[in-house]
Image (cartoon, rainbow, N blue to C red; front, top):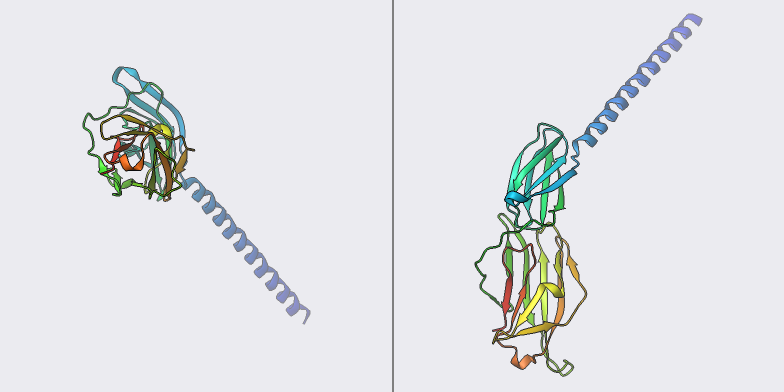
Length: 252
């Protein structure tokens, strides 16, 4: 009877040891898998962004996970370079963005990371000499990249009432940031106004507004020096250093 009890105890002890060993092995595998997943998430470390003066181009050095796929583009969705990294750190040169910022996008094991960096002061952004035809107020303008609508904008006259300040005209500006990599910024310095005869008018200063991706915002602006009754033919132009061409709206 004692022998049977001893055998039973040894059996229980053996099963317990096997169970603990199995749990330890599973924990070890799980831990390694977690560490591997952490490694699989690409990080982008910018080492250097340089201006190459002799050909007005940009060279960028960055580090990320080896065997990652990368693309470098500007804010206007123009792809400037792409490839697969064979080493952790690489330098890509002769980049000529049409904006003041570069977007570096890295894909590793189906994980994607994007980093936006400013180009050095002194880089000359090439602009087209072609002008864009003014859009009638009330119509939506879509600012298109190579593969996406980056953002859309509408400017419309406000309805006038007895409380409107004399010799001023008010307008609403609506912006929807669809796929722009940075917030769309509305600021007094980015708006110019002219009347039907080409005379410059002043925009009343307002607080700067930033519209991040996937957001929509409407603000009111006031044009000084012209009553609503004389605002026919008035042109409001939005322009920043990053736009390919200025965006103009005409009150027709």
